[in-house]
Image (cartoon, rainbow, N blue to C red; front, side, top):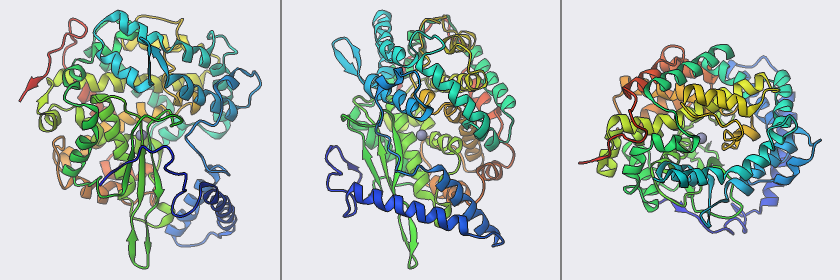
Length: 511
Ligand SMILES: [Zn+2]
């Protein structure tokens, strides 16, 4: 069964018979050992061994000398110090999300960030939506001050761009993985946003953007109460041939103080062969869901997609990982996008939205990711630019949103201030997600309402080999050609003509 673990003291006794401090000591000692061993390992071995040494060396050099934690380590107010070095500034900005974004003040109550997005999709009264949107202002001020050149974000992005200039950025890595240049990537992102701008209408206030494409979310929200999130997730994965309830995936989805301000999935233990017996991987999903709805369900299925990926790995220890971030973020969305398909909704909810409304709900969110990816790309290229102006330009041109350059309303994703460039893994990742979904549909058949062969087939064809080969190669082999934005563009064309009035799409139909 899946463990819903909401006890805040659950690790007080440690894990596996050892305290956190004891594990930390083991980590630090073994990291040093591995670093020494890997440096001493000579070349001239078999090709597989050579790559194993290479992968291990990169992994250990990338990993911090003390274990990383997603719990906030810094304090938001430290971001105001003018001379803070880059890592400390990024930690402080990350802490702003924990301190402010998860405690938005709205109508005498406290709303976490992801729940606020859901409410912006659902609240009928424009004035209340505007009030909720403006509840983000304290966060925006903490991150970007008055938008002047010395704001915490602007100091951060200048340092990050300088560092990326020497060490490469997540955008360079993503470009390498899809086999395109950064200039080509920018073109793809613009092409995708342009296709969206043709199937959507405006002008919209920024607080109306989610509502305008949210008719499916509103119609289906009641069918997905909070208590249904895990059972729906479990049932869909079982129908795909993956049992998340077999005891290897632990879910921690209750709201709790001190929790990371974003949803994530990580290993507790990586599987390995011991005396001829496979000791399975153990993973944990952490998220916060005070409410149900299609958006939270989509996120939960995405996180479980990471869990499915981790559980599928069956290879030597050096290769027991997911590959490049753009690939594993894109893969997690392969099953997650299904919850927006009318076929999925009909089977699992007994009610479905009209195709155009259902796809609008999905792709309005995807387009924000694409817009943030373009924003990140442009800010890293020109870190002197005014971020509010860059965001206003993108959102006015492609999302039909009225200009509000006085507001840093781009700053609602923690990655933008903590790991600049990372949003490309979602924005450009959507291209890979659409491409993989299309390939599966052609090779195996549609899977929105399940296919028991799905997980086994993908484990063999795409996931199981982990990092045995470079992600770029793996992806190209699976697709049978280079990555292309064509599949995503075709999905956007499925939406059809723009709506005449914002939010006026047809409601759900029962079945
Ligand atoms: Zn993810």
